Image 1 (tube, rainbow, N blue to C red):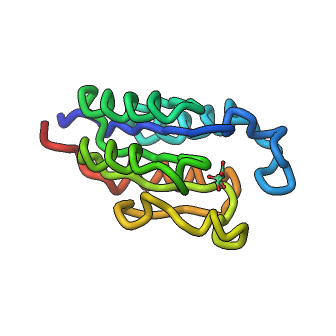
Image 2 (image 1 turned 135 degrees about the vertical axis):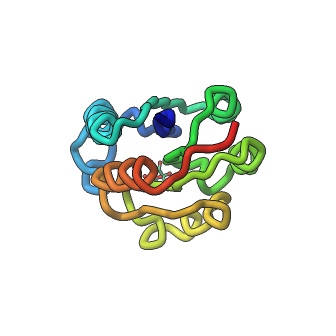
Length: 152
Ligand SMILES: O=C1C[C@@](O)(C(=O)O)C[C@@H](O)[C@@H]1O
């Protein structure tokens, strides 16, 4: 029997405040809820699931490096504001060669101009934006069902 797909969910800065942060934009669901739902969906698909949140760019870079050592097959990442600024996170994702989905709770393209630029979008397998926290469920299910086990 082949080993299960392994998926890592990364949330960047301020996403720990989901549920209370600008709820008219991000809704009322907490990050804990989002992660619990994502884990449930992954488990239903017999996938291995891990989640990580940090508001620090370097910590996110380090976690992406660790993902390669751990044999992660796919990453779902909501980079928060680092979407619009971080060459380091882009380079980390490219460096580990793990396919990833870029995810946003809101649709940044309907918001301020500075949110229209993404340093990841041209390298992402897919982008999910504007579905609220439901987007996490779609992204995790997609990785678990459509991504292939990587050759180690
Ligand atoms: O922190 C965030 C959250 C976000 O990534 C989203 O999920 O909609 C959109 C970003 O522009 C913002 O900085």
